[in-house]
Length: 199
Image (tube, rainbow, N blue to C red):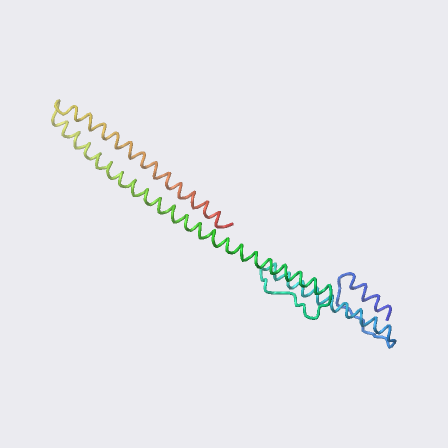
């Protein structure tokens, strides 16, 4: 029995909690020792399995898997209670983080909507200005034609028409630049919002 007990204890010290003492002696003192070693190994093995399963579940964000404390004596029960408390705390933290993630996504969606609405308003203004400038170009062209028909008397009118055309072309060029900047702003805003949402 001593050799078997030594081998069982040696295995346990190496992390193997499976072996037990099977040859229970008839001597009451030795029988009690063998049964006590087996009981210690049973309790330790149960604690290790329960704690391992609970910790693995927590690592997988399944915080409902608790250590079963029924039948766990003394320090084993205290250790189990501590693991369960830690799991509960992790569960609360995960809920807080999940809520924060959801709120962040909602804020990103709202910001994205606001950016898009603003961009559409700017596009409408740019389009209106562009239409006005196109009309001004047509008027300048007509004025140039009429000034040419009027000859010397229309020369001053021709200068004004030429300036209106230049101004229209300059504004149209500026509007094209605004459109490009607006597209860049949209793309960059989307990129930043996507990065924020992904965190």
